[in-house]
Image (tube, rainbow, N blue to C red; front, side, top):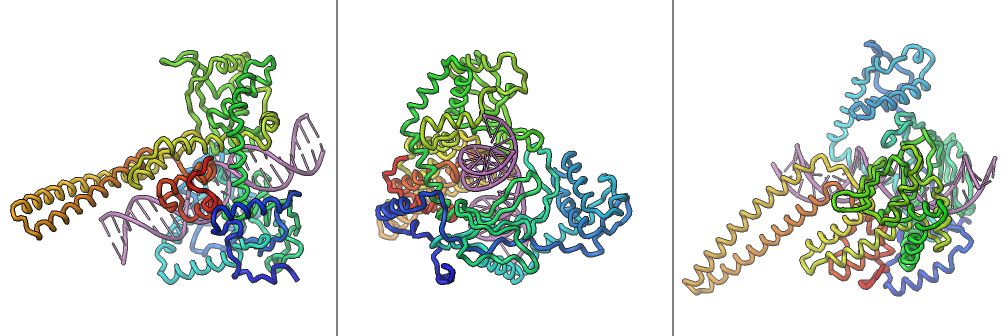
Length: 592
DNA sequence: AAAAAGACTTGTGTGAATATTT
DNA sequence: AAATATTCACACAAGTCTTTTT
C-alpha cells in the first residue's frame, strides 16, 4: 500500500509541522532536531506524490469569418500554420512586432509550420495582413470582460478545481503547494533586451516531452488518455516534480514547489545563515583583498579588484555567456573595457570610476564612484593595451573567483555578498531611520530602508505610465484635506469662544467634538503626506525583488515586533506564507 | 580542466483581482 | 454600478552555482 493512500489528502494541513505556530523557542528546538535528523546524504525527500502537470488547452481553429489576408487576398490556413499566425496576430500592438529580428525569427519558424502550398504562397511577411484576426481577439477579450457574474464565477470555480486537483503534492508528511503546475503554452519567445532569438516559436509541450519525478511507492501521475510520459524517474536528490526541455535555448524547465513549502523555506533560511556567517568574517576578507591589490600576480590583483566591486557595489558575479544565444549583458567578472571609464579627477573627487553597462534583464547599471587610489591604479593597469571589447578582467572568471571565496569561508560565493550587504543595510537603515512616531511614519521609514537596499542592488523600474497623474490626484486630495483642516480649526475656535461666553455643558461638549474632528483630520492629512513622499521617492525604484530575495525576513519581523507595527503592514498574504519560518522564529531582539 | 548539462534562485512584465473613485 | 487605480499572483526569462561529461 502506498504511503499516501493511508493519508487522506484534504485532511492534511498545508503547513508543515516545522513551520507551525508553535512558540518560537519550541520550534527552534524542533528545527534543530529536524535538521540533524534529516538527510545528511544529500537526498531531499523520502516520499513524493503528485498528479503531474496541467497541459495547455488544444488549439481551437478560428471561425471561417475571421480572415487572414495575403497580398490583399483572403486565405484559409491549415490549422498548424493558423495557430502560429494567431500568436503574432495577438501581439500586433506590441513593440516586438515592429522589430526586425522578431519579425525575421517569427517568419522563419512560421514557415516551418506551413503546408508546402502555403509555404510557396507566403513568402513575404510585409504582405501579410493580420488585422482582422487582431480585431477578433480584441473583441474576444472584451467579451470576456463583459461576461456575466455567473459566467465569471463558473470560470473561477473551474480554476479552483484545477488548483485543488493539480496544485498540490505530498512531500514527505506534508501537503505542499506547487509553484507552477501548468505547462507553458506555445507562443512566440519574448526575450528581453536585444535578444537574438526573439520571435522564435516556443513549441507546444506534450506528455511525451515530460519527465516525471516522484517516489517509487507513490501513486504515479497518469498521462492524459492515449499519451505517455517521456520518463518516470525516482530521483530524491532533486526537488522538482516534472521537467521538460525547452526548444529556444535547449534548457530544462522544471515544475517545483511554491515558496511557502518546507523545502524552499529551509533553503531560504540557509541562505541567510550563510550571509550571517559572512558577517563574522567580512572584515578579514576585506583586509585580505585590500592586501591582494598589491600582489605581484596579475590574476590575484584582478580577483581582488573584482571582489571589491562585488562587495562595495553589490554587482552580480557575471558568468560567461554563449555569444549569439542571448542578449549581450554582463556582470562583474564579464565586464569589458568599454563598460568603465576612469577619471583621475572629477569635480572635487579623485579616482572616479564610471560604470555603464547592461546587467541582468538588460537593465542598465550606471554609477560613478570614487575608489581608492590602489584600485584606480590597478584598473589603469588592466586597461593597458586593450580594445573596448576586451575583457576588463582577462585573468578571471566566476569559477576562479568562487573557488577562492570557498577557501575564505565555507559556502561563500559571489552572490552571498549581495545577500549580506542587502540585509545588513536594511538592519542599519532601520536603526537609523525609525522614528518614535505614528505607524504610517514608521512604515515610511521601513520603506526608505528598503529603498536604500533596492538602490544598492540596482532594482530599478520605469516610472509607471500613470505616475504623474496619480501624483496629482494625491496632491489634490492633500489640498482638499488642508482646506478641511482649516475649516475644522475655525469651527473649533468658534466653539471655544462660544464656550467661554456661555460656560455651559452643551458648549463644552461641542468644543470636545470639534477638537476631536481637528485631530482626526490632522491624522488623515499626515497620512496622505507620508503617502505622497513615499510614492515620490519610489518613482523609479522597485522594492519587491529585494524584499523577496535579499532581505533576511527576520530583520523585518523583529522590527515589527519592536516597533509595534503589525506584520501585515509589511508583508502581504503571499509574503507571510513565504516567510512563515521567519515570522515564527524571530523575536524582537533578533540581530542579523 | 574545460565545456556542457542540470538544478535552482532572481528578475521583470502582465493580466486578474481587489480597492477606490466617480 | 461602472470606471479607474492599485495591488497581487503568476508566467516565464535570465541569472548563479553545482554536477556531469568529455
